Image (cartoon, rainbow, N blue to C red; front, side, top):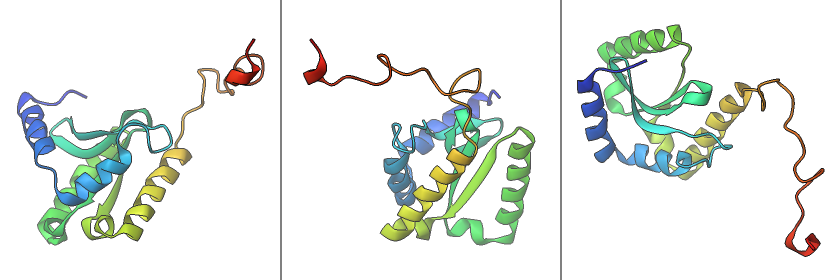
Length: 145
């Protein structure tokens, strides 16, 4: 879904000033460190900006700071999650405090990976496993002639 131009502009600005918990989680998610999944940070979708988003699994990861403890913000978060769910996007929310401690960050990363694996798409268009490489396996440099 295309986002309005203003949302893109806001997302770009948010990428430049991420919070410490967002930076720590991004260091774990960036590239394909999470089971080969590709996450984008501060991803605009419709009127919203997702902290982290994996398009292949339609998975959003949100980092909630103290601002999200208020009743008004909780109601907004529920409306937002419902809007995203209508579009098939699953939202995982984590408290910033959980990400700031090392054990908590490991647990958060493990939960993201588990949800991504649970919702993993088949490895090929036909739903089967991919064909073997190089006749059944990759050959090492010493095996080549």
